[in-house]
Length: 88
Image (cartoon, rainbow, N blue to C red; front, side, top):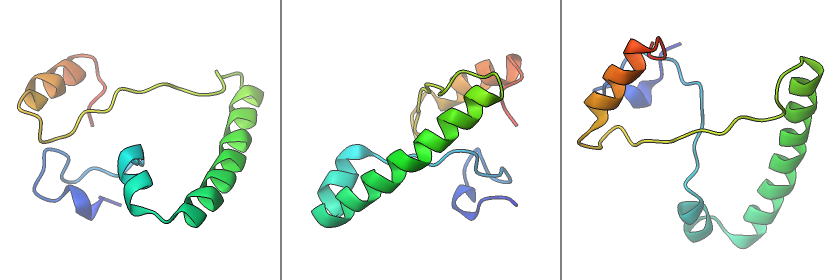
């Protein structure tokens, strides 16, 4: 299902594949007690994913570059991604 948060952006009509949390926002806006609880649950989930990926013969985790859609050079990035079949 298309993600409503993408409406009006270059990603309109796309489904969400990744969830990004800015760690500075997380530290600033989330209460300490919830940060600790989230970290514990998140680490447990990450362990499950890493083990599942290994069982599937994949690397245990990926590394990503994150670029905000409002950057002035985003159209250049999108064109590069399209040329390499990584857009859409």
